[in-house]
Structure formats: C-alpha cells, structure tokens
Image 1 (cartoon, rainbow, N blue to C red):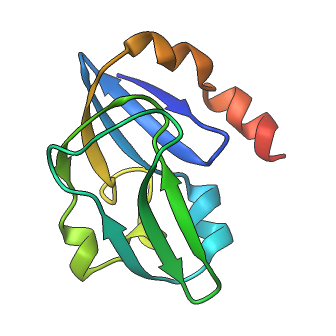
Image 2 (image 1 turned 30 degrees about the horizontal axis):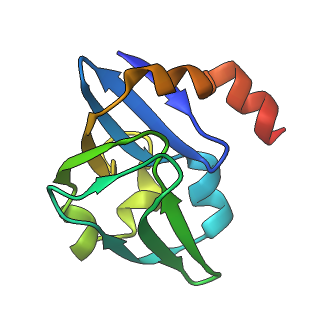
Length: 121
C-alpha cells in the first residue's frame, strides 16, 4: 500500500483500484475537538477538488475535498455517531471514505510523506 497526501490535508492510501481517504493528523490538530461530520453516500461520484464532506469542530467548519476522481464505495458510518474519533486516530481507524479510483494517474499529482511534511513545515 502506498499513501499520498493532498495540499488540502487529506491522505489517501491505495490498494489496487480502491483507495481509503481521510484527514491528516495535522488537519485534525488544526481543527481542534471535532463534533460533527457530514458524509456523502455510497455511489456518489466526484472529481478531484470536489467537496465530499464537511467536518465541524468547536473552532470552525472545514470542507473535505476529493484528492482524486472516483466513486464512494463505503463511508465510515462510525464517524457519524463518534466524530471525535477523527481527533484520536485520523490516519488509521478514523478513515472517512473508501473509493473506487477513476483515474489512478492522478495520484502522481499528490505528495508522499516527506513532501507533505515539508509542505506543512
């Protein structure tokens, strides 16, 4: 599995033509205590840069943007009842979506971990 990062602070881990998407630890720290998440539904299709959800914290609301084109094949429903899980483990158990990639070549436009660390420094 390879993990990529977007400038909008989403991570995407790819296995075959399926990807798991979530927010980075950095994003979760910047948001503070997360109290609500609005998720799209399975079957929703989107393009890179489209808004695919909203996260609300005690500090602010923030959009979740699609790092690549695809279709939602699973939303992490546990987050709807426990959005604070995004503060506890945003880059593992608190993933947001599993998506079917439309154009895997788009991954080349994302950052690796070293590039992302430089980006947020």
